[in-house]
Length: 514
Image 1 (spheres, rainbow, N blue to C red):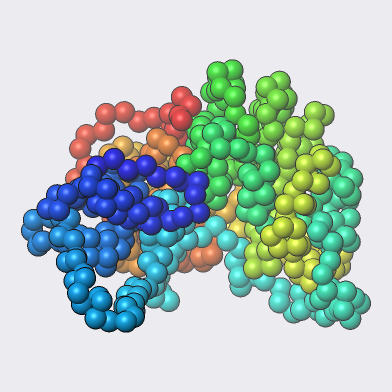
Image 2 (image 1 turned 180 degrees about the vertical axis):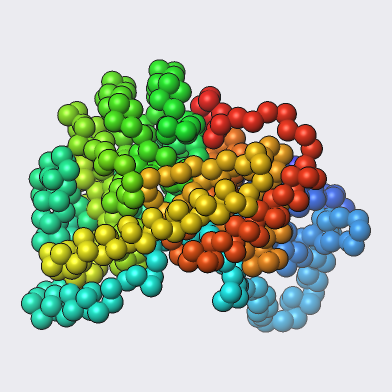
């Protein structure tokens, strides 16, 4: 049975399948008693979900055209008996039977299948007890939020221009906040005009807008491997080709990237150059310059995600890629989500004015503009010096938690385990001895109410099963000690039961993966 589906059509796939089978029966291509393909087999041959075929068969079953025999299969049934002509003449008017009652719409069949994606998987939905030790979320510590100070900023913003803030506003966002950001970035070497910045609802929205603006189906995108799962959710979709370039102990492997750029034609490069998520490593100054030069040489826009930049606990600050870019090839993303209040959803993108114009037009087709009250309150909070004060407090606190985690790893994790020692950011990247699965460790740890994120969820391809990310900002030093003691004990047991290690590589293979 040969069926052809139009995947560009607005007609649901299950409706197309039912209509074509119905046509084959009425044309005689399928005879009474013929067996239809099993739903799983037909789903595989058509490249659709099994539920789509089940729904199509249910429609045909409701029409009386097919029947399912338990343990045997699905068959074409006999046609309804012919209507008696004498009986028809005896009735002056034929009464149309009432149409059969329609079954509720099967949304599982209408919607496309949800792709397995690390970004969704990382958003834990597990019900946890209050005493759970959670190392999964790379988030600010809520107990450090200066609620009274920020409340006063909200009140000042409302008193000053409340009616305007509660009305529709400009697509670029709240202008005073833009001006503040431009002034602050100028101090770090990023010089941009008012038409080269746009406020967004965080970096995730910026990535979505950039994807829609710059990519076409079939385009290739270079991402670090491993990388931020939210970037994977945007760029590693079926309509694009995702190229994973390895991340080593010093950051993105630039030789591997150059090899990709020489052989392929990617349309975008996405990187987290400072306190990389998930590994925590940073590109040094020479590597940053070379990365910008490679993007310029091969004419590929380079997205830098600098969301962790202000969370430095040690070492000298490094310039952003945008500050090193004389070619207008770098697109700079940042957000308040990691340094202050993620619930406000305020970020920004700095890019050439032509691109900003396209992003603004696209954004206005979806949500017009961001939360003006939140933007105005943040502008006041920053102008009062309260944002810098809050960031300094967070740095001191997070540095202590990072140090507590590194000490606990040294104390409790098995021989052969390694981990990064980031100079900033919100997490540590660890690697268990070869042959020990982080997923297996998590399965056992959950039974003791300890949670972390397996490293496999951060890879575009070639995932290393023995890696894990440990976020340290939402747990206390005492909780860190208890959590690592538990994980270390469980990991020791897994090491003893694991097969002998064949090799011990670095953070990732040194070859770009597609």
